[in-house]
Length: 72
Image (cartoon, rainbow, N blue to C red):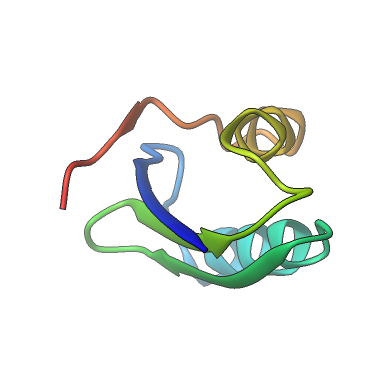
């Protein structure tokens, strides 16, 4: 299991967080997704077949591109 946290500056409201959590959680291998309005962060726990590449691609496709990995 891998956990990553991305900076996603496009997050601005509850609709944004729900969209991200719903869409990303549908990827096969994703265990959990938590998007935060205040910090504009998305934390994702996943295993294969999901990967950082597939997650970042999906975020860009739904108009919430990740702008960087946040070290925990």
